[in-house]
Each structure stands twice: as C-alpha cells, then as structure tokens.
Amino acid sequence: MPFGRRKRSSSVRWLCKLLILASLSSVNSEDNSESSLALSDSRKEKLLNVFNIVRFPNNGCNTTSDTYGVCYTATECVSLGGSSAGSCASGFGVCCAFSGTCGGSTSVNNTYFKSDGSETSPCQFEVCKCSSDICQIRLGFDSFDIIQPSTNLPGDAIPNQRTQCISAQFSASSDGPAAPIICGTNTGYHMLLEARDDCNKLTFTWTTTGTRTWNIHVMQIACTAKWKPPEGCLQFFTGTTGTISSYNYLGSYHLANQLYSNCIRAERGYCSISYTATSDTNFQLSGQNPTTLTSPDTTYLGDSCTSDYIILAGSGDAPTANTNYDRFCGSVLNLDSGTTTSATIYTNKMPYHLGVVFDGTELDAPPTPSTEYSKGFNIYYSQTAC
Image 1 (cartoon, rainbow, N blue to C red):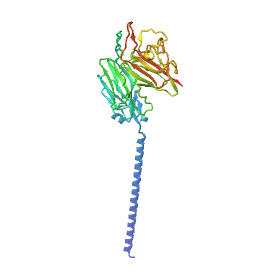
Image 2 (image 1 turned 90 degrees about the vertical axis):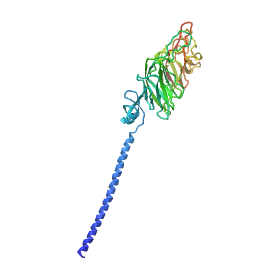
Image 3 (image 1 turned 180 degrees about the vertical axis):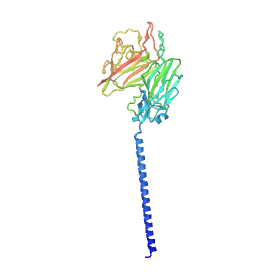
C-alpha cells in the first residue's frame, strides 16, 4: 500500500480517538458539576436546619432586675420598643423589658405602666390586646401610692364622705363588670379586667398635689390559658392558705363604693374553707364605735348588715353547720356580735368567694358621740382537706 494512504488512515484513527476523549471529558465535567450542586444544596439544607432549631416561642421571662419580660430575638426586642434585660431560650433570645408612661399605649404582654414624676392630670395609658385570643388583663400593683381617701369625722348623723376617693382616683375600663375606683396605698394588690376589643384604659386623676407613685405590671391572659381566673373575679387567689385585705387597708380606711368578688381556687383534695381575721382589730366594717352589745347577739350578721359588709356564702361555726349566715359586718368577725374576740368562720359552699359590698358614705350616730367603723378587713383563709 502506498505510504501516503497509510499515513492518511492513521491520521483518521487519531482524530477519532481525540473526539472520544473530548466527549468523555465533557461527560465527567457535567457529572462533577452536578455533584458540586448536590453538595451545595446539602450544605444549604444543613444551614437551614440549624436556623430552624433555634426558633423559640415568645414566652414570658424574668429580667435581670427581677421583673417580667417577653423572650424575643435582640432585633425583635428593639423593633418593638423594648430593652434587653437578660437572656432566654438557652441564650438564643433576650428577655425584653417593656414600659410606658402617661399618654402611652401597649399591645405587648408584660408591660409596666410607671409614674415618672412629670405626669399631669388626667394621666391615661391604653392596653390593647397583643393577640385576638386575649380574654383578660391582670394589673399587678408592684407599687401604688396616691392620695388617701377622705378621713372626715363630722361627728353628726348626716351621711359623710369619709372613705371616698375625692382628691385622687384610679379607674380601669373593663369589658365586664365595672372595676371599682380606688385610691390610697395598694402596693401588693392586683385587679383583673375583661379585655376590650377597643383597648382597656387605665386612668389616674387628681385635683391637688400629694403622693403620686405607681408601677403596674400589665399581664395579658389568653382565653385558652388553663390557669385563667373565672369571669367576675376582681382578685384571684390560689393555694391552700393566704390573706385577703380590702383595698387601702394599709391606709387604715376602706374605700367607698366597692362591689366585687375575691375568688379563691378550690385546691384538689380540699372540700371546705375557713376565714379568720388576722387580729381582733383587723375587721371593722359598719357598726358604731363605741357600742355595747350583750352576748349572744346577731346585730352584725346576715340581713342586719346593709351598708358595708363582706359575703361568705353559707358560713357557720363548722363546714356543715345548720345555722349559717352570708353577710358579716361590725367590729369583729364572729358569729356573736356581743363578743370582742374574733372567731373562725367555715363554709363548704363552692366556688369560694369573699364578696365585698361597701356603700358610698359613712354615718356617725348621735346622740352619744360615736363613729362608724371604717378600717376595712384583713382576713386569713385556710382550705381544709376532704
């Protein structure tokens, strides 16, 4: 075969080999590219999984200053107008503290409504639901000290304004029964409101200079919360024992125009409850000072109590007593108005309520100078096991 033909045939074979190698190289390149993309997607999924793990609910938390806050990310806290006060969610979140003053509003849980010394009357703060499933607002009076009610002692038989909040008042709107107007010293007390769709309004007013400080913890309670207090309770107490006082008890005068219920949760395994004044002088509602009654006497029991009194439904000297009363007033908590010593009152009527009914005036009786008892009450309760 001529030399030139062999050379041409050899060249064709080498060209075919080169084309095959190029093709294989292209296939490998595509496989590597697809493999790289798969690895990249895998890394992204892992990164996304990490971020999903550290997501956390916006639950309540304790701040470094021993108050309540809400757990948010640092960015969320700033955007909502709060301030970082500790960590939460295993360090992935901050315990965000919220507060407001006169003229402000909030739609965030665990906000504090505070005085700052620059407020003018009237001072109003609005509390709007943080979500559509909020049913109640709980006001916790971490501090509450404004001008005391009237302590007028005219010494005559004309109804007087003693115990009325005249110079300063605090009021709170509710979607349920109206909350009573209060004044004086109420640090440590609380107040429950039914949440309004158009926001609840907290209002301080005053007509003269005087003591004026407050720090109110505003907690929002979901309709589905298992621990939500029953409707119609202005205060709600838990535990087998505790103490309940009339508003402004620390100021030595109860307040006028009070109509509300203190509710006590019946604890599991407990079937009755007892009530005792914390001392012989820590229950003083209506009745005249001084007065003389002969034991036994029921002057300040049942239907005889018509102006200022408490309600302890079906109460007697034992949980199953046949003789019982609902209303109690006078200078001592007892089933005998003729004594000067307090006694323990029992009831097994559920739910447990300590009702408060105070009218709008006090009446001092003539002709012997005397005054109507106006101190209020401080009562210890204790549940009894079945």
